[in-house]
Image (cartoon, rainbow, N blue to C red; front, side, top):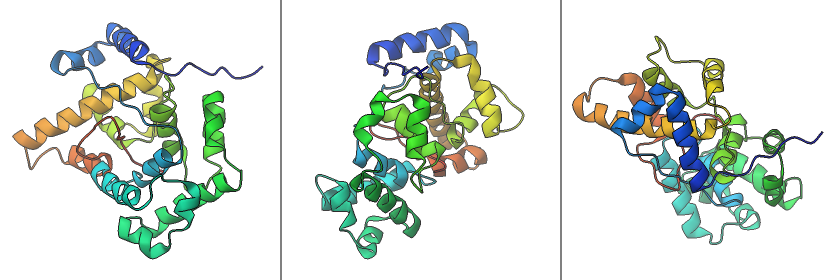
Length: 245
């Protein structure tokens, strides 16, 4: 039997899911008593968004965004063929590390060679999309899940490797230690089938908690500051958190 392919989130279903989660989890509901609802931010499908997500691996969003913007200024539209024309020195000048340049080239070559067809991913089940993406060296579970969550807008994606989610969950749930990826996965099960919405809400909580902590206790909250080095210090409709490939 074919795997179920859930409908992408829309603004309407996102709002409905937020309400459902808050009705069933007092801790999540508490977030919306102190903050406005999170923005329903998305990304356009395709090569450019996946390159941007690769750049976000293990660095701040601000740093990744700056590198991506420099790349887009040099190549517009950003295509796999155009990317493959760039040499190492040029990519380094945009802010690509040697490793990320290799990852991005692997992706571009896979598309050019017909190994990966990004336009077909929206017809595939979550598991199949993940399997197709992680065939490319440099794309791991986190990168694949962020593409599923922000580009394909799948409702039940949970990037358990994400450091900001772990920090937010520890604080919200008053846990004695930061949860491991498996512990974070276990914690998320009560939020099915809307875990992607729960993730967006926790990211929203994380960022706003960090900003307040930075103002009131600039030399404290070390754990949150460390996570921010991975996650970045701003969120808009075109950025996502980051931790691992």
